[in-house]
Length: 157
Image (cartoon, one colour):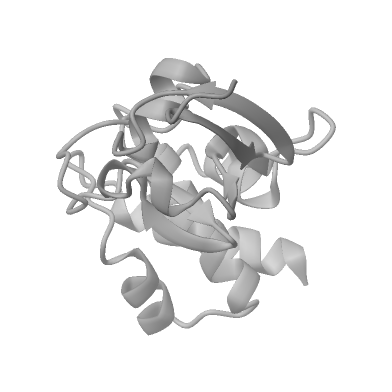
C-alpha cells in the first residue's frame, strides 16, 4: 500500500492496513472496511452516542471523527472489550440486568459505562448521570442501565 489513501490503524490491539478516503468517518471504516459491526450508526452528528468507541481510552463518537486524525491512536470497539472470549464486567452486568430492549444504542452505552468505571470505581448516581448523559436510549432503559453500572462497579470491588 503506497498510495495517498493507505494507512494503518490500531483497533482492538491489532494493526490493520487499510485503503480509504482519509476524510472517511471512523465509524464507516470500522463497519464497512473492518467489518466490526458492533458500533452502530444512528444520528451521524455525534449527538446520540450509539457510535461510541474508545480512542486512547477516552469515549468518542466515531461518526464525527475522520480517520486521518486518529492514525497514531489506539481504537477500542465493543468487540475489543471482551478478552479471551470472556465478556467484560460491564457486558456481564448488562446481561445480568437484562438492559437492552431494542438493543440498538447498547454498544455505545456499554462503551461509555466501561470508561466511567475505568476512571471511577465507585460512581455516585450523579457521576453515572454525567458520564452517560451523551448516550440516548429511545426505549428508555435508563434505570436498567444505571443498575447494570452499579452492578458492574460492585463486582469490580
